[in-house]
Image: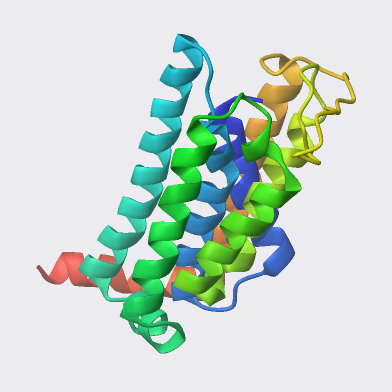
Length: 213
């Protein structure tokens, strides 16, 4: 499936599965799920795939940047929860390991290491070192990518380093099923987040502050 589909499906899958109970967790968790949903497509082998990898890096940057901007401007408590749940040493160590895995994955054939259960475990562990509270969101986003990619025609080596690839061969990665999944991911994410009481309260508070300014 296309990257934007994985982006929104990963978010929706994590939100409806884990049901975040506070504003800091819904913001950080949604960002982590979105990153988990797209990160496995940084593997590449052709010039076209390299362009796709660039888009994935951009999507990851945007998701992470959005979380940072929201926290910086509205002080919703993500940074406080991060430091309570982790420390600088863990953040540096986990981030370095995550980046090293990305570098390794980018050099692998498409749908091999980055589309495997081993990669899911390793990347989720890195996120768990950095910020344990959002690691389940990342993991579900990543898992959703592996699952829906099994639906289309190109095989993925989900049991890497075993060489055999698997595919259900049910649909095209760019066809109607892809569009339907993306629409469903957007709809579910938007409806779920907008109906959370603490999100509605935060939105009302933000509007009040903006009017006062």
